[in-house]
Image 1 (tube, helix red, strand yellow):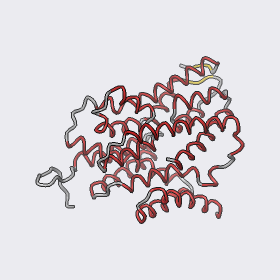
Image 2 (cartoon, each protein chain N blue to C red):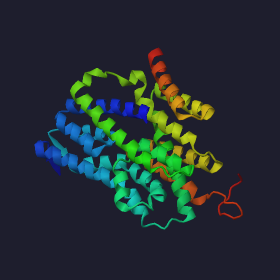
Image 3 (tube, helix red, strand yellow):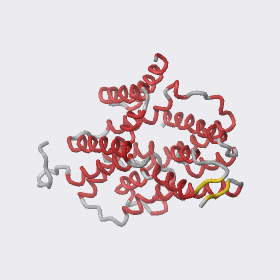
Image 4 (cartoon, rainbow over the protein chains, first blue to last red):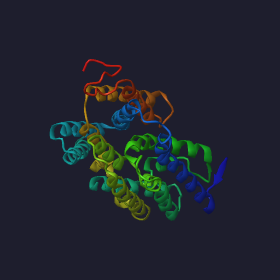
Length: 103
Length: 224
């Protein structure tokens, strides 16, 4: 099935994208409202939550250039040392800019 | 939220510019950002844009990239279950990576921070619309945000959020497995499945390895 990108066609496509995205925003909570939250399920949810972050970041590091790698490693070290997110992010972004400027 | 908003404006501007270059009308582009509000998936569909667009592939790509929302929403369920449905789903309208990451970390520390989902979400949404608008009309202004490292703001932010949380051996094992699974999925599975694969792998660790509660025997213990 294809849609021509006429004026209405584009609107229909945007609407389809909106509905699909909305389904993902609502779906997780909706499905969970039918699941009985046992300690095991809660433990699953909690480890999954921070694993989402790891699963976004690790391929980003492997895919990225030297600047991306510098940004992520500098942020990681800064965060572990300083334990404050804002400075950690700032030095990470600065590291990316610096590496890309120098190399 | 401010540095993230700046990043979102820049990312939005990049999207706006790319979209008009692909032939989308300025108003359609802004409308898409306003309604869809999911940057990576909007970018991905641009690749599929032309005189005719096949619907099913667009739906699959949008769903795959945004399927991380399913897991993010599920992880918020414990803090949303006592919220009235209307309010609960209104909050979820503006659910996105950054405000979710803050809310999830706060919840781990025992704070139910619904305000950050709503307030942060609205700020990010506006930043995304403003950014798109800037890109559509003044796309040339921000030629190369990469030189300033702006493309890394979100990655650094999410990493800082993860490392700011609890780091028990159980969590570290889950992260290691999540990292391996996401890399494997990124390499061998269809595109855009890596976040879900990695997150579920990490979740499985939590499922079988419960946190030790004082005075209670728990199954699946590993030396800690």
